[in-house]
Image 1 (spheres, one colour):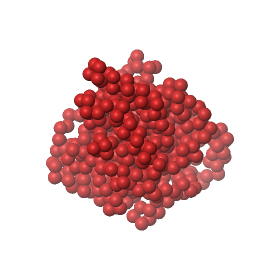
Image 2: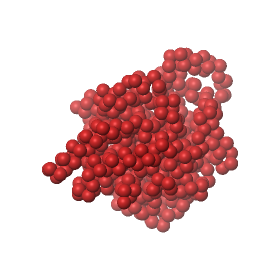
Image 3: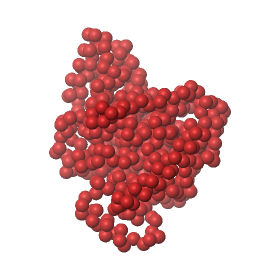
Image 4: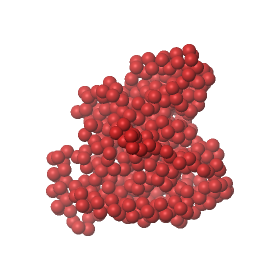
Length: 485
């Protein structure tokens, strides 16, 4: 019974608390006990905040028993948050030892909103250094393992988030995403994740103080064991910060769809410059065939924008967006390296160097190109409701922490592919500020999870989530990894 509760959705947990079938403190102790017993094999939860969480859970139980009241839709639900979110009194390092002594003075805005909705935040989960890898390891907290196979990565940068959810160590999570950092871990660990439309949720209090809170492409969003939880959490965290609140608010349009037969979807299995392994493609082909049988209109050929152009624009804008995190010394070194690049060098390292040292006029040209392609996406969504595509080229790969990311190879259909090539699947929607939901499709032949990326039009978040919810009910949903169930 305890294990069954541990893997319940946050929606079900909140309902159980409201009906007094379990207390918030009792549920918190269940997750703390599982973390003590199971986390050593994973190293997913790296900071505990047990004492304040217990006080908070007790207060919520008193509110429930004395008044029959609840704070909001997450009343009493224990949750963890990605290490890059500020939680009062806890360190936010983003994997840098130099920041370990710094303690947050206030909670990040998203954490405040989750707590105002009744969530009990009891810890933080692991990340890669600078949130810049599809693995989750750093010199502060070490390496996080995938609960489906501890010799493999959980993804990144919200790798600890996804691993903790999959292993039943927490009820809900919140991550961030600029290069698939929500979507990729959800795929590798077999959970749900949502990258919202750019700007829907404020990033205030996320990342290091030196980071640009209004930077391009980057968003925050939830991870969960149910697509219904994603919608609940998104509605909780959505909205501007105090500075913008006087002038605008978020009102995401509700989905008008009620059945899969009402959807028009395009399916993209692979890309010319970012090949996808057959193990992943097979799961998408099976989904497309099943959708046709449900009456869904499925097109396997339609494409919104040119894949090669989209990837080039994404890398340019991505590395420009992350350039503020480069030290002055490193930036000067990259400027010197740029001068020595051959004009025809179009490898990832060369693209990264040029983009990180981009001049403002060059950035404006790239942004203009993006806006032109964004119009093409908008035209595409006049004909289709969603694009379904991979989240990564393979299932979770073995730990590989040697060398630079572009030097680390991943076998795709028997051929070595640089791990950075897989960023295509992050940027195809991300560069254009579109919402994307990651939903599990089941296990590949290697026994590891495979997910689908559900891409919608700008502010079409609830349509993406509606489709994921229908898949969860009718096709495939979360399943617990062996050894943790």
